[in-house]
Amino acid sequence: MFTGIGLIAFCCIFGAGMAGLLLRKILPEEQRTDATQRNVQTVMNVVAILAALVLGLLIASTKTSFDTRSKEIEQFSANLTLLDRELVHLGQEQKDVRALLRDFTARKIAQTWRTDASPPSVTDDAQTVQMLDDVEDRLRALTPEGEIQRAARSSALQLTGELKRTSRLLAVQESGRTPRPFLVAVIFWLSILFISYTIFAPLNATVVATIFAGAFSVSIAVNLIFDMDRPFAGFIKVSSVPMQQALEKMKP
Image (cartoon, rainbow, N blue to C red; front, side, top):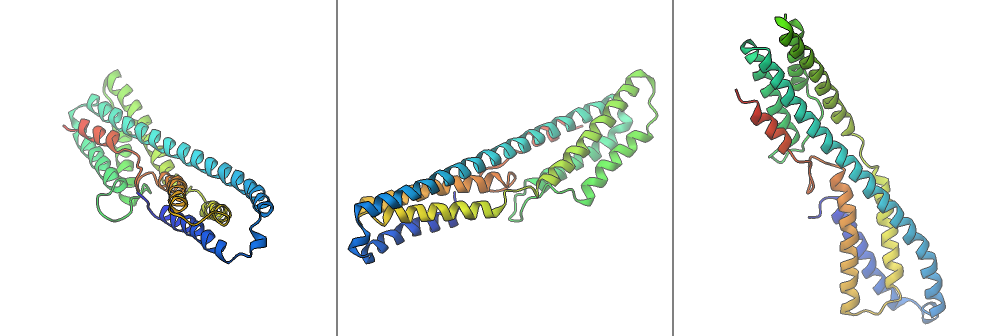
């Protein structure tokens, strides 16, 4: 389940906890008094509150971003289906345009949700941009016959414009990830917290198990931020089902 920075966070936090237990043995007795412990815990409570606030804000921010991407994919797939329906209303002579739209959808799915080891990307490549431009150019060159075709052509052009905007928006959002210094700062705060908690704790199996459980729990939170920050890769992904359904409905 851990990927990337989540595993790093666990190693740092758990390692800090174990380091605190080892430091306890070498600290002089006069530095392990109850008064010292109370003062250290009072100062560390400020760090704990700060770490909790920042961690909560990062989770909320990345979850909002993840949900936004998911909604955009749903809207994108809906517009693809609606555009295909409008092309049907424009007559059989638009079968080549429908085939081009199917190819665009299939390429977009393969590009965004890769099955191989290469990283996914929603960045507009030259071929997908050209394919959508070709669809728009053919619609602009079409001379509609009758009110039904005029309405279908107007709606199809509007949907094509929305597809281009959403596609570009997804590409721009790919670079808007959580700054890594935020995560580094949170990991540092959590590490010193675990040191402060364990430096006054006895060395036994219960304490070690508690350190492990605590480090594992907060590392999952860090890992969730990292995963949701990459909505088309990692353990948590935006579903490709809406796009797959849109492709299925485009079959001639």
